[in-house]
Image 1 (tube, one colour):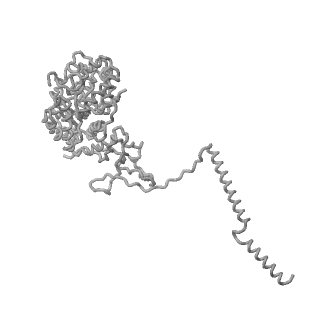
Image 2 (cartoon, rainbow, N blue to C red):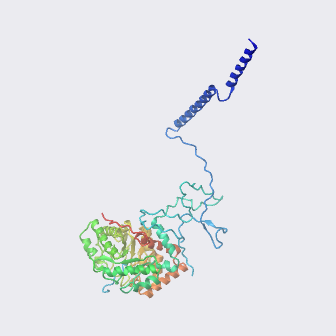
Image 3 (tube, rainbow, N blue to C red):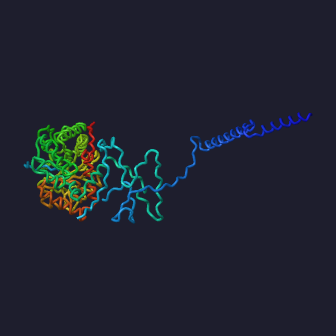
Length: 536
């Protein structure tokens, strides 16, 4: 081969070798990479398939990730005099609770506080109802953080307690359910009661003399009364409405929680507003053997009348079984002498009255029907055993509790076989707590019969002594129709008993909550009362 051709051939051979050895340009190399990738995919698919088979089908379970500890969420602390950051400050528990009449005229008669209120709570929106329909989301309880905004991380678990420490109050047991709008309204109202006088005042349902709201100003403004009761203050609906509007204005001017405004409106002889339809006595009604629907409509009709005159509570129905023909005070006010009839009609009436937005108070617990003495004039004493009461007198009260009656009124009657102390039921812890609360399970408002003018009380106890004994026994709201001086005496003794510990903080708080819960249920704390007929 000539020298020139040999040199040219060697050059062409070098060019081919260089092209073959250049990285990324060979199709064989690309084919190899693709083949390897497909093999890896096939192996992965086989692993997943076998995992599904081992789990019995369904979605494959992923291994649980070990949570990453988060920094503790800042809490709310309860501090002493040294202020925040003081040694010994402890986290507040989430959602922790704060420490804590018949009036029927006789025949012919026309230092530092002990109680610590709850911290202020945001009042629910005015559109929220006591039944919880349509409220704005409740405010976070003290000591808890609000839920995180969208996109924010949820706080991690709190640090473990130190060795030997007991369970944390905020984590031990079941979680505390969020408070309802009604509970929030009650807590907010409690936070407004700054003094012992304010707190004790909520336990008073006071009568007054006169036919104007101005005559009631001292009882309402000076004694800080939680409620006002009509006796002989108005006879027409127009008079009652005008007085009630002025009473509410006096309360607002005095920075008071709106008072319960109460009246006896039973029908028959006990109906103080005279220019409205009187549907007759309970006895006349019961003699017709009416249906539950008819009894409910009777309650609803009474609610519509009272609501239009701006009353919020009716001291009705009478739940006494009239099984003593010589009874001088109950008689035709009772539905009858059959406990089952009284229970059925009384429960239906309560559904109608409360469905119409007026609180009901069943009376006179544990039963005033089998007496021959009027407690307006003397102190009756009855021999019934608890078995007797269970069979007759308590039957209507059990039915009332079952339909969530707002209040139950006590009777000024001694039951020696149940409480040998000689105290009437109103002043008896055995009756008002042991029987009503513990045996029957009543959780509502316990109201006394009139303690200001009924001789069963006034002939045997001073105003202050009777008031303190009633609250100690378990009564939440005291009716006092006496003159202002005796009302003042009762209020002052109650304040003294709170301060010296005769009335325990927890007893006072429970009484306040029972009063304020009725106010919240029936629209007095800023949330409108639920309105429905309550009738079939």
